Length: 330
Image 1 (cartoon, one colour):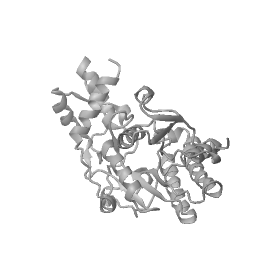
Image 2: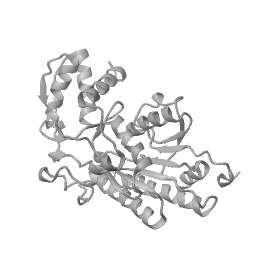
Image 3: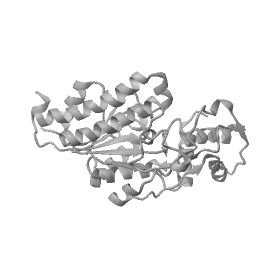
Image 4: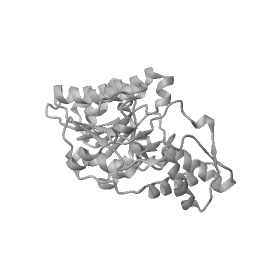
């Protein structure tokens, strides 16, 4: 049977469900509407055993145009959270081609699949698409005298990943303006939580978890940079509120209310563990260049949706540290 002739399931769709944010979003959506969400995955960055059997999952490469079209036609999800991406700036330097292909071509495939449904089986198909964009789009605009930055700040990305997210962001805008596909451009700032990889919080917590078992020093890089660190639970709340109340076509910063000096994480970890940590600078952990501060203005999000961050940094560190203790090798 052709997928366009099947009765659509109309489950909420989360692409990139086997990433850190996607996995937490699945948990939030499934708890609110059991059986009403489908997650797709490819090249997971979280442990699949933490998801398998708990959620409806389908393997999907968003770069496979035909597969994306078939899935959207069969499901016709009323809400799509498009999180699938190559999300590491470091990887984007090594392979900018694949980064652009996944982030840009994958986004085109999703929007074109929606257009195809409208042109075929269901002219009235009108989903809301929440596109996970990034603070990396602002790039060179992130200066100490220019923060917190608002959504109208110039987009000046500094690496291929940031460029790919600008393209994704503007693609969403043009599909809204030209095709009236409702979408939200969610510009996500530093976010962390259990299952996160390759950020300062997860790295610190993984090292501290080893120290609690084996002793040793906490290896660190630059402790003077400042980052607005948002808990993933607050992020997924913002994404859900934007799907429900966001203005189609608009961009919204999703960011914590304040920026923390990275060095200030250490006394919080000492408090949580009861250990006086010995700090040891590691030249390998210093980057050639590092934004001194990353902080966005979240006023537009708050005014539109009523969102407020509710998880403080100590609670976030506690959750990540407990996860690292439970899931890392001894």
